[in-house]
Length: 389
Image (cartoon, rainbow, N blue to C red; front, side, top):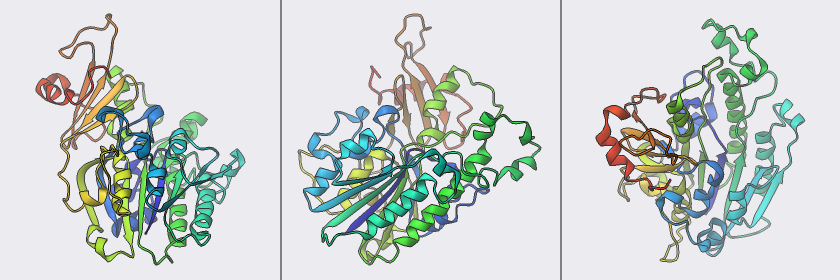
């Protein structure tokens, strides 16, 4: 049994063709999705400094106490005969250190590496990942290989202007943009995503020769907010949305199973269930057939079981967006709370907190705040958030 995870610090879900984008070319993402499973409602449960800890422990602060140290990802897998290896860029992040991988490969990438398409961070990570994939050292154990990628940065020359023509046709004068505006332009991000797609294809092609049952997971810690150039600053309510809106907390999640006919019926599916990042560890335990006991504190549920109705669907997800923001997401609503403790803030029906509420999935961009019109909905959702957060 083998598992491969490809994860990103952040990635815009709506930049991918398999999630509805019609103008950015992502053929390898789309081909993977066509024969795998796609989750349309996958959300980050933790943003900010603790991001990634939900992957490590299968829990997050709003769902109760953080799991016991024995629930850390790599030691738990190792205790059941699974080897673990992380391949990442420049340095291990706190969550990667907390995971306690058996082996870590750190690829050192310089600023000059980002100037050429074949030396960008993801390109170097793919090469190191394929080397690690093919280097078993005769170890017969089941294994997990995890590649973690930085957020897409401004791509090399050629890719940074790949999609500018589309915007010029809409009347935007791109030559008048400053360097800062140009770097933040959606066309530049689109070029970076296309370059990611190319190297994703290189990695998937390089591991297709495997004959072992293999689970492949592609996901991200957070989404990405597409900031249009020359956009004016938003209101205070908009600030909360920028921290916890769907663009930021909705992240891609795709699964695929190779060489395991028992799981074949779970592929080529789209799921609209509410799922989140702390489900990753339970999914690995399910895949490697590792039982849990009372000492293993898990909040998440296996994504493989979510695809077969083996577990009941969730009615809501809670999101720790970092002080002072928190959110609740349901199939129909996104509620964002900005927790305020100052006595100088005008009192609302919910105390000093500022509440925002958006209708889902209709309000794709979180622009129509209906909190004042739906106090009963706020009252139903706010009970899921800790009073002091």
